[in-house]
Image (cartoon, rainbow, N blue to C red; front, side):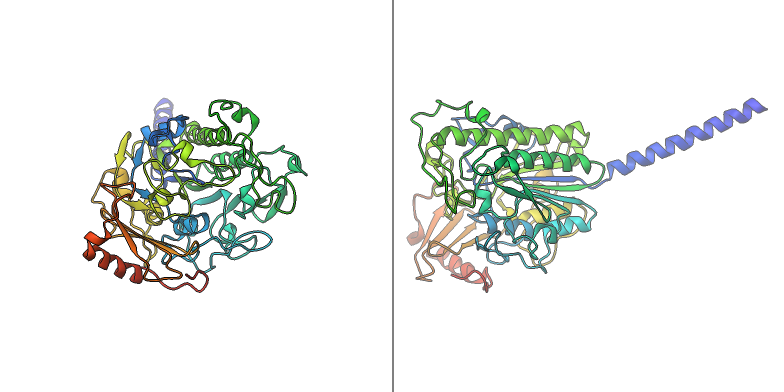
Length: 476
């Protein structure tokens, strides 16, 4: 009798253990997916070997594309830093988003995103996500309503100010609301290469939050000017891109490490070294999620905030950084706003796929909302691209994409199906000529077809006037 009771007890115990284990497994399998969004700074469409770069390679980013989906018609939010990030965080294009330009605040930071704006980080935080941002913010000076900690991020580490983010050996970084003095960079010393320290904090955040859903936003400053990288990386490329370009920059005075670009006698090698380091960091992020056993429940996206720059000694034409496109950073031609976009999510996004779906930064809020099991706010401009990513369901298409840029004479652009319309000089002449290109046949925007298609120009004029609300802060 005693043996029988013990046997029953053992069977009941086993049942309880199996029930607990099954419950835990179900809990793990239904946890909201983690989201890692890596945003390069001024990386051109042609700066990755998977997009055609031939002078150097980016094996880790290429592997991310091989294991996921590469987009050929993805657009940044703007052609410069702050408004591009604003579209990402708000789900609204630059005719509607709050921040539409790089408006500086002295001594540190940029014009703040308004407190009442509901951001992507706040949306995910409301869904129970741990939220962290590591890199460059640029949407509100420290302590302002636009500060990252006041816009939904539990943790921020890096540069609050994108002007100070021009410099790779800064005197300080921001750790939430604290100013972290980098003693190794005192005076003119180069002891701490900031992107490496920021990367360490990124990996720590991923590891610390691996048992709960997290949103890890990684707005790297690479490869924005200045063109600096640790010696061990530059050494890999020294002498490979001769004749070198010697850039004479700011090595002393008030602008030193406060926005001025330092001198770089090996601009070509330095640029390749920086992209090499960025690629290495992407590989380490992928390795970390694999090591933690969360790869199948983590979507990783890699993209860039706008087209390639020509500052600090950079020579995008030498590296063919804008690929087949015309224009650079600050242009609304394709070279200024069409950017690389790669998404990987093992088991959910089919591997080795390429998509020509037309998408933009403001699509990220509804996409991530759907991934997190909630709805995006009403009235935004974005459309979820999850059906494209998963190859399931019908993908809704944009009627058009819209951009406006408030400096260099004022600029607007529309992408509408195969058509791309660009208008420059509108600050002085609101009726400035509109250029029109068929970017499916003419991606380099070389053949202006405006005179041949007055009906398309009439539609573009209507959209230019109706696709925006007036801003009290950013005016043409």
